[in-house]
Image 1: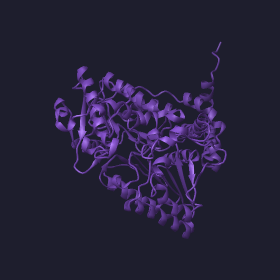
Image 2: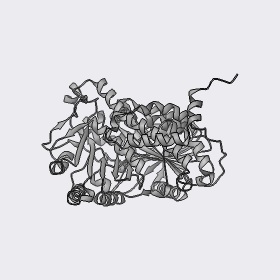
Image 3: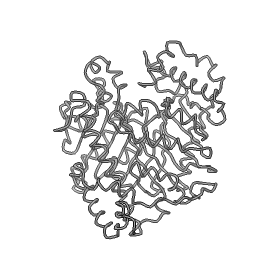
Image 4: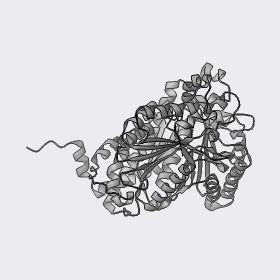
Length: 543
């Protein structure tokens, strides 16, 4: 007697081109309609469709560049990510690595000026200097042009910032954007995310300068029509001039741009809305982040944001099925996978943490990982994986003089010394385990600059160029995992030109570094006072 048919086999057996076409048309309408935030029954198909996809074939990895291993090999190694987060397949030729603050700044200005449909900016804050004003002026020009030109009358500008950081001081991010909001109220939206953990007596007692330590909106996404810049850089003059970060520009990536636009919109919907008179309000029916019930707010926000992630995952699965049936773009053209990774632990969202842990867990003796963070403060889980797995690690962090808090007044001025102490503790652990050859620590040096780069480059066995990178806002530290809203992307690529750009980026950063040794901590400027050592656990959790 034949075995009873399972739901998985049933879905897989009936998934014909005709069905694929129906699902595709449905999904297009679901995702393009203005009411898409209400959700859909298509979500119920997510587990079935994920299981119905055939398992990737195992392909051995030859030595040489990652491109030499073919799409099946790379798919085999990183396909598990598509089971946890949306997976966007794009041409690697559409991705460019930017390497300097000025490139980042000029790329944003040029694309704001030419935007026809949408400009979406998500950052911790917007600075108040001349360079930031020029960026605002570009938005004003684009909005004015959309009013005068019927072909681009639909331009919308959406800005998402953190409430605490964006409201600091009398002249702040809000006052920078108010003129645009007052003049173009129907085309402009400014959302200010407020952590639900800063509430009650704590909100009254914590000084304004330090209230952001409780938790912030830390996502850095800059979107212009179908082009996106993912970075760790904020919208502030130092990030445009002499603060080294990482930046990746993805052009003509409409599906990915739609995802990030919808993600920022979702976070914006659960945020305070800036009004033309500088007051703030919540959208009707939304729980207030610090006046309402904390659990109710987190649940509502999680539902709204995960709806975007889940729908994108289903839609990409549907599109992949349709592409296979219709013989879409060749593998040579779509040679790169982009996986958005979102981390919002205060809201119960842990996708980035889960993927990063799996990636570090799978990094065996045949892999090399170059990892960088401006604030080197690995969580215990990440620390255990770095010290306990077999991969070779080259870790780059800021030397004290390029730490963003170097020379700061008050307690903040002790933060670079605290990071010296953290680095020494880590280095001592490496030495105690006898792993100095496998795990090496480097410090970035550059006169008159600060260092804010974060992410990693992943090399498989025998490769001289990375096949995967993580790039975005997370720092791999306690705050990134537990307190803030974060987003980055994993880019897995077979495109040799993109691999070359990633390799050059990695070399450019590490070229300005020196390797840490015992003698490093014997230098006079590395002496850490006892009181700083005592407060370092506190600093690790809040900075």
